[in-house]
View 1 (cartoon, rainbow, N blue to C red):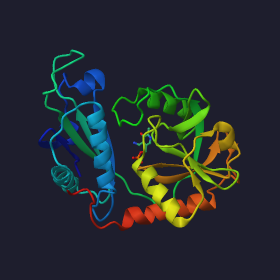
View 2: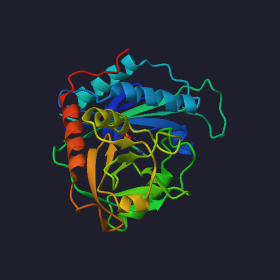
View 3: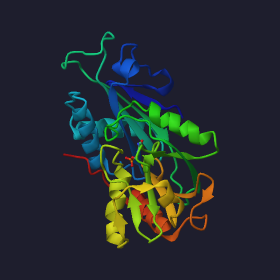
Length: 288
Ligand code: PMP
């Protein structure tokens, strides 16, 4: 089955999809993106909050964008249909547009939008992950879902080279902000679920936001308060969240086992709660 991509209005075979040389995404990483997961019912999970974050990112960068959520969903469903895969991810990228390489351009430039799909089967049983910490050398607006991800990629390589699955980023004050492409959580030594607050220092994950609601409804103790490496090493449990993973348990940090070294009970209930939520959705919530 050949994959299909969408390049600014045209559906093309994925391996023939190209972006113009003067796309500002290529010259300056001047653009934003979103990653949606979709389930076997062909529903984009939490599409509404994804669109909200997309528009906040576009607004922060002053990129004018006139397509409605409804129009976006029509394109997304058409791409899903053409790719004929049961479930997976959809990547949507919008750059400021095409222009000769100058740092500033007219605000009237037409944005350039590309979409592609990656098939993926979401397994009910998650893998057990290990993380290594890395310095958080990124910029000061990590709340914007920018396509500029070099700081994240350098951190992920730093962890991969030690055999880790993900990097946890430590800022100059000694707090863990988030993972290189995921949000970071612990169940601390008092049994309280902790994650960094949704400030400009992290990307406020859509799964993070969904999980905060689930934690409240399941009655677990929760604090949106940053934690240190020391807190993490003393934690009973640790896990990460993202749209491409859902909830995955972390069983070792810098080669030290977390808690008893397996998936903890709180992580397991949240992992299952999210999995069932993701797989039982019957319709998109992003229509206006
Ligand atoms: N933080 C970063 C840096 C990310 O790249 C991602 C995934 N895009 C997340 C957190 C998780 O966000 P979401 O739950 O919206 O996938």
